[in-house]
Image 1 (cartoon, rainbow, N blue to C red):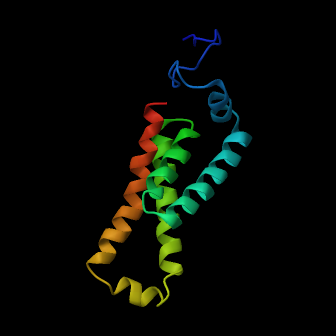
Image 2 (cartoon, rainbow, N blue to C red):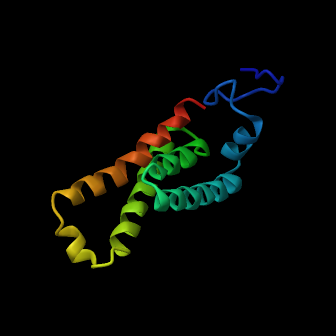
Length: 124
């Protein structure tokens, strides 16, 4: 497959994927650094607003090598977001988990929103 700029792309990357993003996806060291940076930036945005969970998933999805890996990384970031939420709750873990059923929504959204955002990898 040839991109508009004349460079050959991989079968997993659409022709409109920027060359810089393709370079990050193919180099393991760059990808590892990009995943950590994307997770930290995404979780920082999620700390401000819950839509940041989608942003976190989208960011880790963009730098992932494939769509299944993007969804897996989205779930990892979601688990990290839930862990940070539970551990930083002012009344403690026990009181947080006792807030049923709203805690189910918190945990479900924390796990699924980043995984859903990571599906952006299938487009770009």
